[in-house]
Image (cartoon, rainbow, N blue to C red; front, side, top):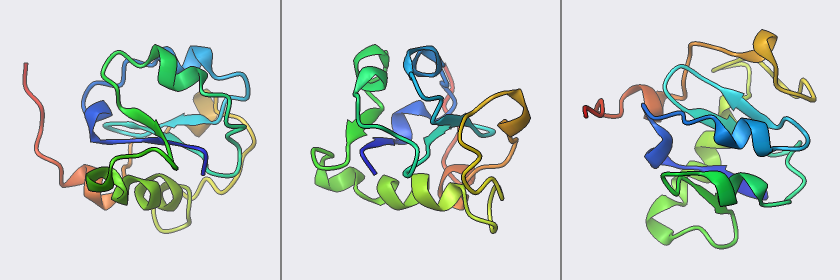
Length: 110
């Protein structure tokens, strides 16, 4: 997985990364966004536009955030969103579900 969205995106979902992504590999869940591991082309545009620094390349992610690699990947499986690999995010692929780690995350207020 070239890029990963971490906890800084939860309850923020700025969506600037959606516009920047040339292959539409960023999908919207209920409280956060997720990068599809098989669709990302490793261009890095999403990372450059994220206002909360929630996006990292998987080989440069801080140790304390490595669990987000699995969270992003598992989101697309049948147990969570059931999206599989739709090859492009759009309104039909938006889900109001989240990975259990995200769903259990304390709400951000402010």
